[in-house]
Image 1 (cartoon, rainbow, N blue to C red):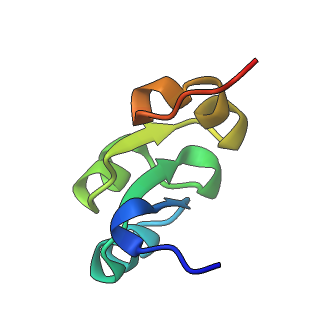
Image 2: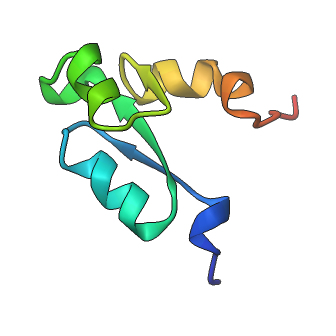
Length: 69
């Protein structure tokens, strides 16, 4: 299944992941689990920054994603 990058989000834990997401046309989401700080990830282009993937999943509503119960 192919997904248009404009409809995709890329979770990345390094400052290199976020420009790569942008170049691909996707939205970059920063994760603090890679050793980079919030400010570094935001400067690299992160739309939002979360502590780790579990934190991101707990707050998907901030990304415009609705979870069904």
